[in-house]
Image (tube, rainbow, N blue to C red; front, side, top):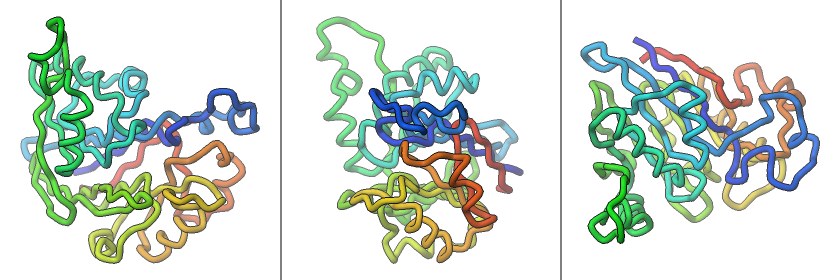
Length: 265
């Protein structure tokens, strides 16, 4: 049985190219330098052999990402945290409600779910809307770091990460872990990231940033965790793919939009 992860967006909150920027990355003709806002898609078979598709985060570019990859069914969304570049495509989930004729399951920490309810009252309190409207039909499920849960016959583990001072989640499924938009992995989380085949981790830029890992910091964590393969994501317009990728260790690569990574599940 295999797990396929598709990188839907590998950029920052501003995306690449950025509005109003004519730097060498924003004007690059290499498609690997075009980065949507961050999200990934997980595809695997459940215990009955039925194909399942899970999103991690709903970026503002979600509609284009789903059309680009011909996705017409989703079986759930996992949220890492409550920043706009990871959430604000949420309204596009209503199209999946229409196609599938069923609600969508949403997974996140308690604060994340409470924030969704407060931030999107038109979705979660539709009776207060001035006009009847077509809104996403979402079922909220609370998860917590270091508390594995079963879904479709597989075990998912939320992993505590730090995004500056903000506690956020990464997710592990089998021997793959997705740890985006982070500046540190707390000591207590390292044991949950041992024995990985694939680690996906934040690598914003070369220079220090208060809420993101630099390239060198990410490489240091990769060296500590020793996955078989690692991919950097959430990259800014300072990262030119063709320049940096060949300089990385043999088991480390830059991700890019549309890249698919497969591992045993």
